[in-house]
Image 1 (cartoon, rainbow, N blue to C red):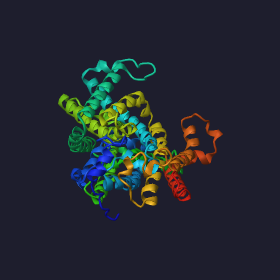
Image 2 (cartoon, helix red, strand yellow; image 1 turned 180 degrees about the vertical axis):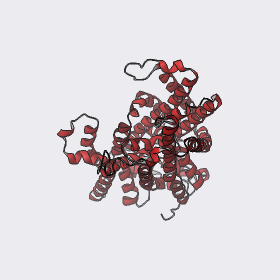
Image 3 (spheres, rainbow, N blue to C red; image 1 turned 45 degrees about the horizontal axis):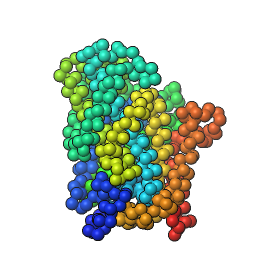
Image 4 (cartoon, one colour; image 1 turned 120 degrees about the vertical axis):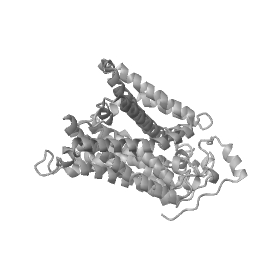
Length: 501
């Protein structure tokens, strides 16, 4: 990508106009050149910090459970992240050039008020992820405390919730820690990320070394054939599984591929954000998922049973010091990933609803409350549902948004935005009463092809009632949604050139 000049700071007059707008608050303000300190190392570190987490460790397990062998699973994860890196870098461009966060970036394509539609769609997905990561952290506390107090894990499951009182208490305790970090602000998040990256990578490598030593190798899973091979239980079905799985892997970071301007706005140059993200994302995801597969395979030899959850592996250790250190490390790591990946963006997105009333901190609290109400333990209860209902389903929403943003910024505007107009209710991006109907039509057009397959997936509609074509199309939902929305948006802009829509 050719280096693009970073937009100059606003003049005194422009700054006064922007600050007086109802669309402005300090959290949504464009970052000045003096505030840009992120070099490529910062972006690589960000991705290493976020990618090295328990969901990544466990990601390949879902694919192996579906029939892949270890290298097919790791390669699928690597390819998915290589693909999602492209819209990640493209959407980051506007953040770096103009210093704007994701919801402000959306105003150019969707309108000054219409930007709330993609922002809230992305925010609700983040709320789900916030809940999932909080559940993982709380569950780690629950399982390790259960080693010291066995009676904790003997409680009865509560009706409707589907978890025990002790699990709920640990979940809410960890949830409270997350809210405390939100209260402390963005500087605390940065400190956590700096601690977390070496901490969890070290823990993963230590587990890898322990597993290799204790098992005399990585065990049977690394030599286990794929279920899709000749003579396997799913012979000849590989490609039918691979593409929906690949869509799910893209969906894993499809959220960040949209709101990456929330971070790239602090970059010193386009080169830094491109190189940093390219170095930090695909390889870290592949490496950490491989650690998960290798350690898991070794547990089959060591314990005579396959243990996918690293927390369950750690609870097998009897040394109390090891258990306490491991619990603290896992909690800090999960906390840092959760805040950076699942609070920064939705907090800004909710603030965009009413910039003068909702601050970053208030937006973070809203994220936390919704994350609890979504009962995240049910989202991750089933590996198949985790990939094909959760990851793939929200790809149907986020793929079209990505297609529209990239079509608008690169295809229609050639990378040029009016920074002041992005904060002007009556400016260029007002369109029709604040909404771009071209973007709204493109969004609906991008989502619709995946709707029949989604309804079948969640069993609202019986499979026989929907054509096999539409059911199959759901497995490619991110690609289909992105492509359809991209094309419809550009066509709409060309047909309506000059009109306010």
